[in-house]
Length: 224
Length: 224
DNA sequence: CTTGACACTGAACGCATGTTCAGGTATTAT
DNA sequence: ATAATACCTGAACATGCGTTCAGTGTCAAG
Image (cartoon, rainbow over all chains, first blue to last red; front, top):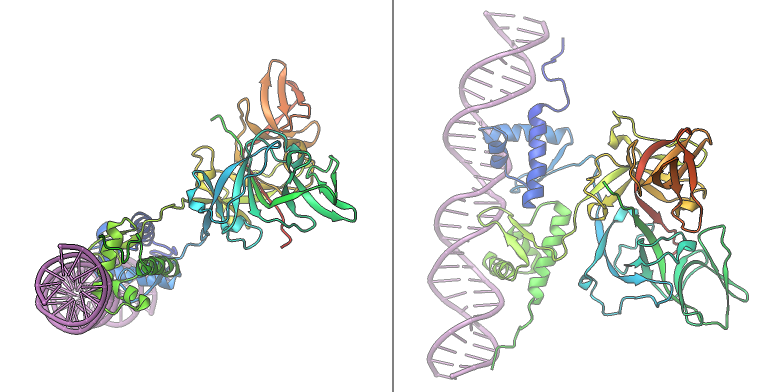
């Protein structure tokens, strides 16, 4: 017959060691030493810790840089990716121009900011140039954007057909978020809400594209 | 006169060391040793590295656990917070019931998932119970939610006034996202779009609340 | 010129830490 | 009983790695 005593893939001690390594790394920003693992998991001998670490390495739960002090790390089954910070430069209002970052703007000067997971980004923008605006008022409802929503944008003066852009219409003194289409006689600004009609802008009329919309985030208030 | 030679807060070498530590930590998941810093920054002596590390510590750019191998970490001026993973259980369609997590559901089984920064959460939900749905079709435009949007929800059968809820109306065979208000003669389901009229549901009519909406994320396609 | 700060070299010192080994004690299979 | 395997002890060993110190060269102030 086969050994049954501890047939589970991970024994109690394996799990305890694994948890300790993760906690320690989170707390001190560097991995623990073998002796520290022993002390905190009730293991008196360094060789036993090494014994368990070998097993955890073989089972693929951790990775080790032998001979290197504190050179171990847990292989997370569901690795959580990177995130980046996007500065909130101000508010976007229908009746006012759009705040855009100055060329020498230091992105870390912004008082407010939002954090975005890299995995949520459509393209590999890496977020280097991105900025965000908070929508004020409900004048953007035709763009399916509500009061309080966060609009993440990439600064640009040009747009391709199908891009959602933030534009400033000097003649109308109006800021708006629309899908951009270039047509023979000018530009068509199509609302995101399919039940609403587009705005046609002739070539003679001024139209300033301030940026492409990359993402919209709505934080819904919860009373509880 | 005063010394001017290197009056800047950070010299070229300070910056190089700082960059190297960050790169190394990102790559190997543990901090570098003094000697490794020296080799990669063109510094031949460990004492010089120590010399610079002392300065970086005094200027508040790094933190050191003396006597501990590789016990150093950069103090990021803008520390990036934690994030958590929310499973995408399926799609939400106007004409079909809402997928909700089973009580014994293992959240990590979901094939798809989205990552949310903890700082974006309105409350301290910690994301333990949250799940997400992808909106299919544009039948939710009255809730300012578009085709392809990600709706993050907290499972619940109850709601308070003002909560945005996902409800299933058995009589109408319809799923909808609305703001919830309890009134004398029943419930009022208010669209997020202020130009649209509410749905009134009498007490006698069945109404199943499936969850509160916590967040809406719209990833805008970009051609470039 | 002298002084002194600043940046750096090279080496030695010593604790921290990973590794290895000889040997125990159970539990299970043969 | 005997062998085999999993689990553990204790100690010694080798080296990784932080620390310290006696000097060297440079540059600017006095």
